[in-house]
Length: 183
Image 1 (cartoon, rainbow, N blue to C red):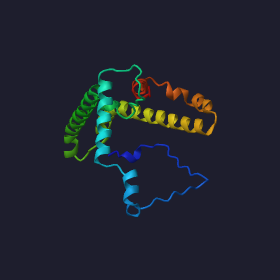
Image 2: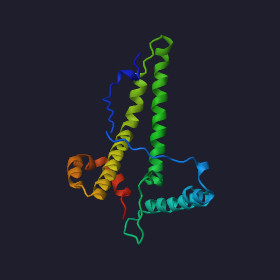
Image 3: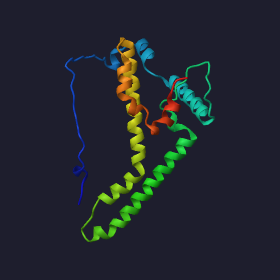
Image 4: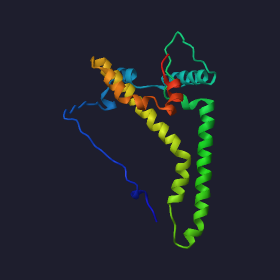
């Protein structure tokens, strides 16, 4: 029987030499006035949800031209009708291939030779593209955040752009990047 422990992945932990501690007060230590300024209430939450709905409608309607407001689609790309259908299809396909692989393993289970690897491989055949895109989007977000930080400190962001250019030019990122920019 194969287990996930047979999969080796390089791991690395890194600690900063500079330790910064930011104390955070307990919510009970804030005054009512302070809480109202920092804590989201039902009205604020409703405004955010409504704003997100209108942005998703823009995505669904293919609106791309410049607007008088700055709009960021980042994080809402997968809420569009097309992306929701694609995600539902992928989840359904993953369930089907896993169930089929499990059914194929029934005979093996009865004979005491259960092997999890075919089930794992069946799932990976459907999920690997989604996983790769998620990793690349995460790297893109990290790149953008780091570039913004370097820009704010006056450091040379050009070095970062050059060192990460192969990641940023990944074809699988094109759809996400086209939806997540601020215009």
